[in-house]
Image 1 (cartoon, one colour):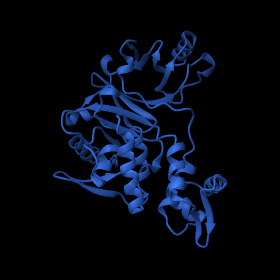
Image 2 (image 1 turned 90 degrees about the horizontal axis):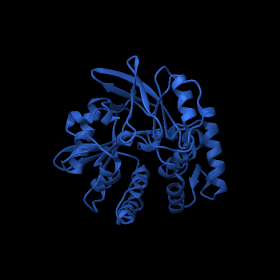
Image 3 (image 1 turned 90 degrees about the vertical axis):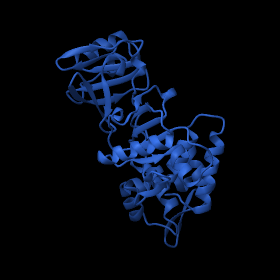
Length: 321
């Protein structure tokens, strides 16, 4: 969309703001991870709604246009309803846009949040305590415990529910966590990755976006192992990072990514964990399990070594927060 004259700014994990020529509108984003057929097209949930899909049939496109949807897809027609008219997007450039991450359905994060919390609360926790700290309902805590107990990962102890084997629980969490999902934007900058992370963190903080840093930069701040290659930040709202010198980028070329996650547990349990970035200032890091998961999603031949170095730090300091 950038190449079609539209700036894309995520508002939250469900909405983006599209700007062009001094005009801007907020769109509700609806994601599909498969080919879209006419039967899949319903009424738009909001006046401005954007359907994002990998492929859309001609018949589905006709139905979507008739019902007032805006559409962006990898294969097929794409358009945006904007300021009383239609912007037809060029098909050979539409994948340059920074699009929401795709996933199948909406994963239930409750069991993963509960397990994160149990790993962090040593000595045991009651179901009501788990609900409070994990920020999920007590019925959901009960369901999560039933599942984790069946897997042999948790048991009841004197002071509440505890993890039976931390290493096994972390391995299960990493292997099954579906990812934070949400909306993401990709950016490119010329400064060092650490500088980009700090500048973005400061900028998003001033915007009230409550950012936390994950991946390479977060791990390097606490357990230096290699020079960070990519900056990843989670935030509650997006912003136009061209204002701090970054440029929208294809994912393959990006030096920095901002994600507005569906999963609120990407943040640390309790108060923000501030870490000093040498020569710059303090920044807040993401939950340590989230940092581990993000490290394992990276590229390069040493991804596993980087993740292993961070996991050793978690085990050594018992820092699953």
